[in-house]
Image (cartoon, rainbow, N blue to C red; front, side, top):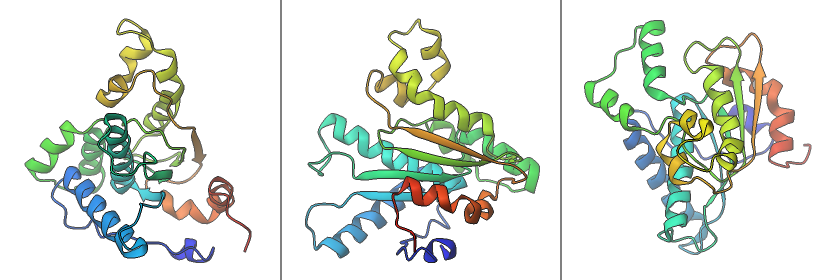
Amino acid sequence: KDELGKLQIDVFAPDLSGVESISEGVEVLAKAIEERQTERNGGREKRPLRLIGTSVGALCCVLYASKCDKETFEGTNSNANGSEVDKLFLLGPCFNVEKCLFNYRATFNVTFTDSFIEDAKKIDKFPFVTCPTYIVSGADDTISSLEDAVHWTRQASTLLRATNEGDEDTKKMNTSSAKANKGREAGERRLLEVSGVGHRVESALPHALPRFKEFFNLPNV
């Protein structure tokens, strides 16, 4: 938030601390966004959102965007212009979150409740989104692997190639939302690998700011 403040960006940061599951985190994020939209727009049409997240918070951003896409696809999204998420910027996102939780326990001796772990097992490993996304991943990240970030980035083109359940690409996706959205156009996905950085990849944000400004089409300040 401090780094983005240097770019004169007004950052709204919902508090996800204390949530007891990832699903609850997405619900809290959705409620905070709804309240923010109402506060800024007086209940009028929702404005497009640009979400920035780190670690499990980054996954919550992806899941929220995927939820908006699903509602739009099914015609249940109240936003007439489709998904309200315009772009995603993810720092060390925890795709394949069940594996990430195991890595957290092994690396930091962190414990999670049984309900948190059971919820994580139900989370789509690689959610589908239609908005453009930029990922910054640490080359030395032992929590959320670079391999998973690469897989999700490549998945955008895989979705367009896979045409039936027998395709090798379809089998590799192993994700419910990808199968449900097969044939739909995924948003552009970019990946920046930062050497010498672990899971606290937000520490690399000062070095990634030029990419950040270019991705969000921000003026130099």
